[in-house]
Length: 409
Ligand SMILES: Cc1ncc(COP(=O)(O)O)c(C=O)c1O
Image (cartoon, rainbow, N blue to C red):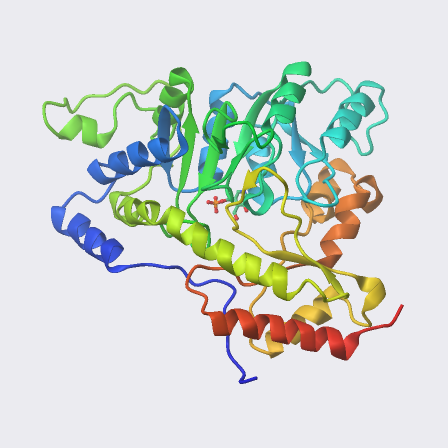
């Protein structure tokens, strides 16, 4: 097969985005204004939420969410260890403590049984690491890894049982949905699935604004707090003050942050949003091609497609079976790179990073599932403009590496 170069990701940007960005530039209004407000309204409608606050990253959205929920220094929040830096660092921003939770071996999502165990261990003084048993756990931040949603009913039941608020890290989960069973209606991620759901529009996410994010909620008070805190804690934004009959004046209600989304970024987002369902469909076709084409490759396991889910298909993570291969994951990735195939790993779990190890004394064995799993993970290229030849080339390359390094068992 002819050698190709397949990047890990290539955004799908059309003439509509380019024209809208040009129109924003020509309008003379660059910061948050009519386009970011339109983007908020259309995004809220797309996920079925009452309110949406557009910000410059998902990290900002998560920070605003936990601040609005009143997270205080010294309180604890359940956070999956299998996630990106953002999910835990925003807890640290407020001086609170991320209590890491192991993951489910099949979905890599947070394991609620381990979450219950961690709460019990904290109470009995047996939690591994150095976190004080007096720490009060007030919230939970599940992540829908790759856009495959957790069971929301189970999450809400767990949160209710333990008196926790829930903020969803939905960075990967637009558009995604779940239902409890075939007879039930679909519930979209963001459709009252948590107190606040936070989405990412980073360059390689399912829709992009270059950098950007959105916090959605059905709670008016939380929405108002997040909106104000996204802009220095001001009572009115610039568009409200300088357009129409607005007054220049404002009040500072709290020392806020500078997280608002520009109209230039929103101009991209509006048109990405309009194509979101189509781009999801294109990713799904590619993912299902991988599922079928890699079905007989003994040296790896394919992602589990959970029942009663509409997956966003942000990631396509394969798991190597080390017992079947004479090379490890990093060497396997080196082979892919050499063949021109871009790939990634989601993720080195948080408990294996120096900051969290040094701050809380966690050890690899405290999170056995994530510790074993991450060493087997490789995320393959998955983006809407991938051509059939590119998909075939990725699979051909993987099969070739497996054949070269197979270890019969
Ligand atoms: C699970 C998860 N949460 C949060 C983020 C942060 O998103 P952003 O870059 O928009 O702040 C990411 C980014 O990759 C992510 O993967």
